[in-house]
Image (tube, rainbow, N blue to C red; front, side, top):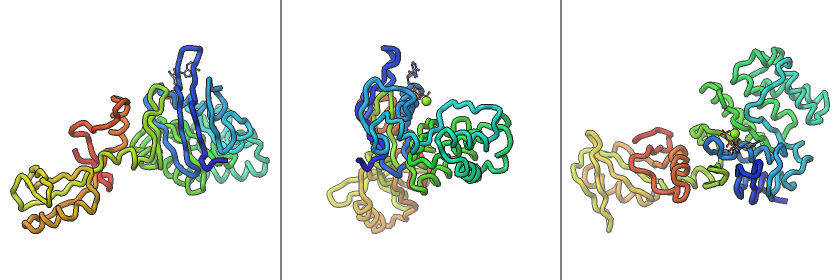
Length: 325
Ligand SMILES: Nc1ncnc2c1ncn2[C@@H]1O[C@H](COP(=O)(O)OP(=O)(O)OP(=O)(O)O)[C@@H](O)[C@H]1O
Ligand SMILES: [Mg+2]
């Protein structure tokens, strides 16, 4: 028995003897986490979730899903799944759809009725529950699909591009639903192209490229190497600052000046601030900066071998989420 919701080792899939969709994928998803699988089109994300849900048979694989060997059909009773490019039967209403999938998951009739009503309310579809799914917008279809994926009260929810085609407001609502799922103690496995969203909601991520996982970890750990502190100040005109045995370059920044401290800790920043103030500088801003997930992703996609050294001028993101260049 493992503490992880998912533990995959060496998962490979070759379609028709020639398309290498997955190559030796190792992946660990902790229980109770929101996990994001990122990757460009064709990276193998959907193939991987289809293997998890036994829709596709792997060429080689070891691992567990909720503590049971990969490929065990019985485990699907505890798994919820929203496939990509799903097509709902057009003659069903939202309520019928959710109840129908509840029936497929062997949920007793009374339970699935109650859960369908509750879930359609959670995803904001209560008022539309008795209208046909063909009258729904894309965002409403996705929200109904998420309700459908929860009808069997799953421990693990797998959502393949849940915000595909959904407008910014709808995406925000879906993000809130994901957080709600985590608060209920479920593990959420999300495939997505939308990096800023993943950054907002995911505890950990993996970046997949041409069937391989090239980076994996918390967003914090994947962006840690790019961390730096930036101090903005005015009323001190000089090009360098010496603190202890370290020399720091000072750049002009409009009417102000700027000093960067790459790879510094908050403690190491304090003597620099003391020295600036001793010299009469007026502090304007102290920012704890790191690369955005988007930059990490683009670098991994461009150069999977190194995956390091942010290009000059790459956008950095402060803790408060603001972007500077
Ligand atoms: N049934 C299949 N038969 C043959 N090749 C397939 C099949 N399914 C997927 N592939 C191929 O496997 C590779 C991975 O596809 P997959 O759909 O898993 O990518 P993805 O990361 O989900 O992409 P997207 O972001 O576009 O959804 C692609 O080259 C795709 O063409
Ligand atoms: Mg896909």
